[in-house]
Length: 113
Image (tube, rainbow, N blue to C red):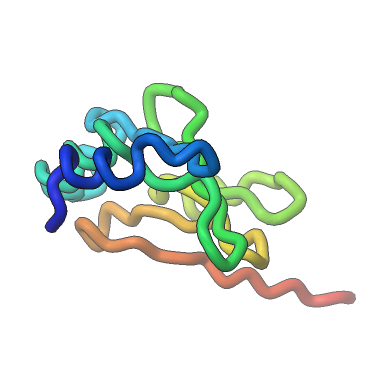
């Protein structure tokens, strides 16, 4: 894996790229390795990534619960997940503590009555 110093030297001064950091404390319950926690805390993920992937963190004490594309919380069903971003379809990209170190994307299906 590329070191945070190498990554920062290559991408840290890019005026078109903003990075979103994730504090190690917010990641601990999700089984993220110490090395990855350090990277995500020091560098983070790009705010926007191709194709239309958006990463965010609201600086709260923990990762937010997932929400649907309309902002309606999915915490009733998925309270155990922590959201780190959204896909192009606005589906939540989350960390799952039952799958340590894994990233999951909730593919939401909507049925019209």
